[in-house]
Length: 187
Image (cartoon, rainbow, N blue to C red; front, side):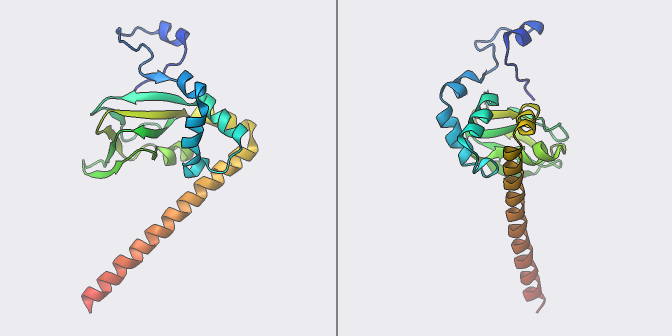
């Protein structure tokens, strides 16, 4: 996965090839300079719903904007989930260990959320299908904010549990429908 560098000191301590954008397409300043757009995106994401404006601003301050080229790997199976992404533009594909495509991911989706919150390694490899722009959130930075703001911590975890519960209900309906189909085939 691409390293995220934010300060000049970090860049000077490592040797990089010259690129037009030495920050490796990552820019926190643009997100902070126009937080309303980023907050608008965050509000549409179930895990970040119902926060206060102050809490949204805290999250925006730790967000980074990152760009990936077509056919680039975002993360691989068994990578540590230290970053959660919000896809702004482009398309991604998630691939299972045996090489089968699991899903295509469109803008406004959150990538790596489950592992991010549960600290479980990634179960898929994620590739870009097109050039992509995403918002990146580092776990250490978000958890630092959450430990200082317990109300935000409770709200985000509650949202996360509700989202998982909703998915479980949907999966149970699918399983029930498949079970009913098998019974009808037997009869």
